[in-house]
Length: 427
Image (cartoon, rainbow, N blue to C red; front, side, top):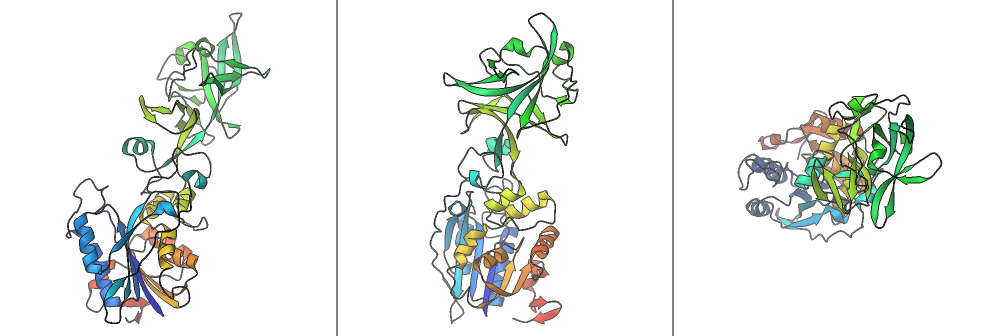
């Protein structure tokens, strides 16, 4: 029977992302959480241990962890096995006959060349690798201003719906597609009329008009009887009428320059999202331009789905979250990149041939269990300390064999031992 201790104490107090009261010395709550792991190792006496934490912890804390665990860490970027940049430190050790621990040498994983676009369910991305997955799926502000979290881009085609002044001075109803063409190296929106001919859109073409958009070949909430008169059209605050919604007056100049962030798409469920134009490697959001690596055109911006975040962490699509998406994002952000752990576990002698007793501290969504299952390990007992009710619910839904122990601070009790179903499982 091989005894394996795994875990990574919460890095909230140590991470560089902690802007207020970040701990940079071996003291405070972050250090006490880590000490629980050391106390558990000293009492449990595992054959192997794996401890993980954020690369951004201070040098002083990193050195003190190394001194306490007795082994040097290896830094592995999850980008080698997944579509996200996520640098983490891993301390991996084996127990010697005299009770001390020595380092197990781990090499870097082979680069699988998995790109962000490869894991998206739909749409595209403007970079090869995602930012490090955090507690949320991503939003536009953090992505462009703070350069973290992750978003995806969905190309859209547009459709004009409304009334216009025809050549005879009368108003016509119209419903026409807007597409983009390349003309002399410049992307211009064009209108596809019923006769199949493309006409470059001019400013006067939009007089007394309203707009909606086409996504995935289907229309949003377009109403055939939508009528908008000049008074409403020129009112920047009156664009929630007729079942069609806007941010501000839609305009298109004669040279084909689309006013950015003028429109929103309204989906069948009533939700709306802005449409942005990318042109010449720039995207304009709320009056500010940002460089972007996307083809010229029109896009909506969306957060990543739970499935996509699972793929960033190399968690199988089949893993089930019986909780809200918000809680799922949080667990995935706190979790491990599973295939990095699989790679490390592969260096532990006997890990796939001997029965395993696993003690996972700060277990979260049981990424250690996922990794051992992927590797083909034979788990006979899996103990976990965890206090988050959503993480426990998720773990037990996927792995009902896990023995939940509760708070990690219990290891400090003089008579502490692992328990199974109320019966003592003495160490």
